[in-house]
Amino acid sequence: MNNEQLSVFFKAMMTGLFIGVVDTVVCLAYNIGFRDATGYIPSTIINVSSLIFAIVILFCVIGIVFYFFHRYVRGGDAVYFVVFLGLTIWLAVKAFAAVRFGEPRLDSGWHGLAGGIVLILGVSSLLVPIAFRSEKFQDAVI
Image (cartoon, rainbow, N blue to C red):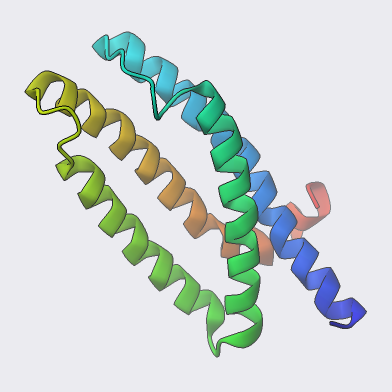
Protein backbone atom coordinates (compact mmCIF):
# COMPACT_ATOMS: atom_id res chain seq x y z
CA MET A 1 0.00 0.00 0.00
CA ASN A 2 1.51 3.32 -1.03
CA ASN A 3 1.12 6.59 0.91
CA GLU A 4 -1.89 7.79 -1.09
CA GLN A 5 -3.76 4.51 -0.60
CA LEU A 6 -2.87 4.52 3.09
CA SER A 7 -4.14 8.08 3.39
CA VAL A 8 -7.46 7.13 1.76
CA PHE A 9 -7.68 4.04 4.00
CA PHE A 10 -7.26 6.12 7.17
CA LYS A 11 -9.64 8.77 5.85
CA ALA A 12 -12.33 6.09 5.33
CA MET A 13 -11.67 4.51 8.71
CA MET A 14 -11.72 7.85 10.53
CA THR A 15 -14.95 8.81 8.75
CA GLY A 16 -16.50 5.59 10.02
CA LEU A 17 -15.09 6.19 13.49
CA PHE A 18 -16.50 9.71 13.70
CA ILE A 19 -19.93 8.60 12.55
CA GLY A 20 -19.69 5.76 15.09
CA VAL A 21 -18.97 8.17 17.94
CA VAL A 22 -21.92 10.36 16.96
CA ASP A 23 -24.11 7.27 16.58
CA THR A 24 -23.10 6.07 20.02
CA VAL A 25 -24.50 9.25 21.54
CA VAL A 26 -27.66 9.02 19.41
CA CYS A 27 -28.21 5.34 20.34
CA LEU A 28 -27.59 6.01 24.03
CA ALA A 29 -30.16 8.81 23.92
CA TYR A 30 -32.60 6.54 22.08
CA ASN A 31 -31.98 3.75 24.60
CA ILE A 32 -32.68 6.05 27.55
CA GLY A 33 -35.68 7.69 25.91
CA PHE A 34 -37.21 4.40 24.79
CA ARG A 35 -36.78 2.77 28.19
CA ASP A 36 -38.23 5.83 29.98
CA ALA A 37 -41.20 6.03 27.63
CA THR A 38 -42.06 2.33 27.61
CA GLY A 39 -40.76 1.00 30.91
CA TYR A 40 -38.84 -1.72 29.06
CA ILE A 41 -36.33 -3.18 31.53
CA PRO A 42 -34.29 -6.16 30.15
CA SER A 43 -30.74 -5.05 29.39
CA THR A 44 -28.60 -8.15 28.98
CA ILE A 45 -27.78 -7.43 25.33
CA ILE A 46 -28.55 -3.76 24.76
CA ASN A 47 -27.04 -1.70 27.56
CA VAL A 48 -24.72 1.27 27.94
CA SER A 49 -21.50 -0.76 27.75
CA SER A 50 -22.51 -2.80 24.74
CA LEU A 51 -23.70 0.27 22.88
CA ILE A 52 -20.52 2.25 23.53
CA PHE A 53 -18.06 -0.47 22.56
CA ALA A 54 -20.01 -2.24 19.84
CA ILE A 55 -21.00 0.84 17.87
CA VAL A 56 -17.53 2.40 17.83
CA ILE A 57 -15.89 -0.88 16.79
CA LEU A 58 -18.65 -1.59 14.26
CA PHE A 59 -18.22 1.77 12.56
CA CYS A 60 -14.43 1.44 12.42
CA VAL A 61 -15.02 -1.82 10.57
CA ILE A 62 -17.70 -0.20 8.38
CA GLY A 63 -15.17 2.51 7.44
CA ILE A 64 -12.68 -0.19 6.43
CA VAL A 65 -15.34 -2.08 4.46
CA PHE A 66 -16.25 1.17 2.70
CA TYR A 67 -12.59 1.65 1.78
CA PHE A 68 -12.47 -1.77 0.12
CA PHE A 69 -15.68 -1.07 -1.81
CA HIS A 70 -14.36 2.38 -2.77
CA ARG A 71 -10.94 1.11 -3.83
CA TYR A 72 -11.54 -2.31 -5.35
CA VAL A 73 -15.11 -2.38 -6.71
CA ARG A 74 -16.15 -0.55 -9.85
CA GLY A 75 -18.77 2.01 -8.77
CA GLY A 76 -17.88 1.03 -5.22
CA ASP A 77 -19.65 3.89 -3.44
CA ALA A 78 -22.96 3.02 -5.10
CA VAL A 79 -22.45 -0.71 -4.56
CA TYR A 80 -21.62 -0.06 -0.88
CA PHE A 81 -24.81 2.02 -0.56
CA VAL A 82 -26.98 -0.70 -2.11
CA VAL A 83 -25.38 -3.48 -0.04
CA PHE A 84 -25.76 -1.58 3.24
CA LEU A 85 -29.29 -0.46 2.39
CA GLY A 86 -30.21 -4.11 1.78
CA LEU A 87 -28.42 -5.18 4.97
CA THR A 88 -30.25 -2.50 6.97
CA ILE A 89 -33.63 -3.58 5.63
CA TRP A 90 -32.88 -7.27 6.27
CA LEU A 91 -31.65 -6.65 9.83
CA ALA A 92 -34.60 -4.36 10.60
CA VAL A 93 -37.06 -7.02 9.45
CA LYS A 94 -35.24 -9.60 11.60
CA ALA A 95 -35.20 -7.27 14.64
CA PHE A 96 -38.90 -6.41 14.37
CA ALA A 97 -39.88 -10.07 13.87
CA ALA A 98 -37.68 -11.64 16.55
CA VAL A 99 -39.24 -13.63 19.36
CA ARG A 100 -36.74 -13.15 22.14
CA PHE A 101 -38.76 -13.71 25.30
CA GLY A 102 -41.97 -15.43 24.25
CA GLU A 103 -44.01 -12.84 26.14
CA PRO A 104 -45.74 -10.30 23.87
CA ARG A 105 -45.08 -7.28 26.10
CA LEU A 106 -41.35 -8.00 26.40
CA ASP A 107 -41.04 -8.95 22.73
CA SER A 108 -42.76 -5.72 21.73
CA GLY A 109 -40.26 -3.77 23.81
CA TRP A 110 -37.38 -5.69 22.25
CA HIS A 111 -38.72 -4.93 18.77
CA GLY A 112 -38.86 -1.22 19.51
CA LEU A 113 -35.44 -1.03 21.12
CA ALA A 114 -33.46 -3.35 18.84
CA GLY A 115 -35.31 -2.30 15.70
CA GLY A 116 -34.81 1.38 16.43
CA ILE A 117 -31.10 0.92 17.02
CA VAL A 118 -30.75 -1.15 13.83
CA LEU A 119 -32.47 1.62 11.85
CA ILE A 120 -30.29 4.33 13.42
CA LEU A 121 -27.11 2.39 12.66
CA GLY A 122 -28.31 1.48 9.16
CA VAL A 123 -29.09 5.05 8.18
CA SER A 124 -25.76 6.18 9.62
CA SER A 125 -23.86 3.52 7.68
CA LEU A 126 -25.41 4.97 4.52
CA LEU A 127 -23.90 8.36 5.42
CA VAL A 128 -20.30 7.08 5.31
CA PRO A 129 -19.84 7.61 1.53
CA ILE A 130 -21.48 11.04 1.75
CA ALA A 131 -19.24 12.16 4.63
CA PHE A 132 -16.18 10.62 2.94
CA ARG A 133 -16.81 12.70 -0.19
CA SER A 134 -17.69 15.93 1.65
CA GLU A 135 -14.86 18.46 1.67
CA LYS A 136 -16.52 20.39 4.53
CA PHE A 137 -16.71 17.24 6.66
CA GLN A 138 -13.13 16.30 5.88
CA ASP A 139 -11.81 19.78 6.67
CA ALA A 140 -13.80 20.16 9.89
CA VAL A 141 -13.52 16.65 11.29
CA ILE A 142 -10.76 14.61 9.69
